[in-house]
Image (cartoon, rainbow, N blue to C red; front, side, top):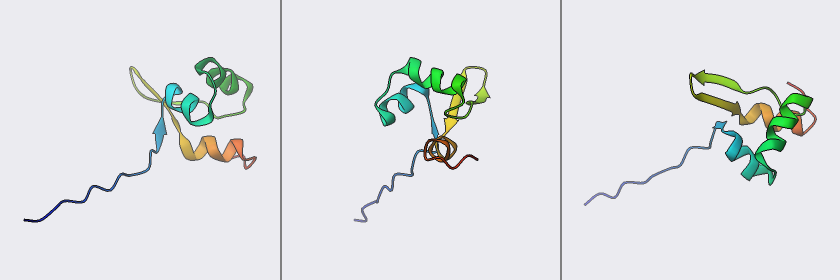
Length: 66
């Protein structure tokens, strides 16, 4: 019998909840950083779907503006 291997893809998009968990900050801080320009504005992927692209967030936080 063949066993299937599940390879988890890296997360590309993140919610405010996920960003808060990744960077050990609160959700209001995620939004404050967005308004201050510390991280990019989120992308609206649908009517009730707002996400940040993690590569963009990392680039800004590491000082390499996009």
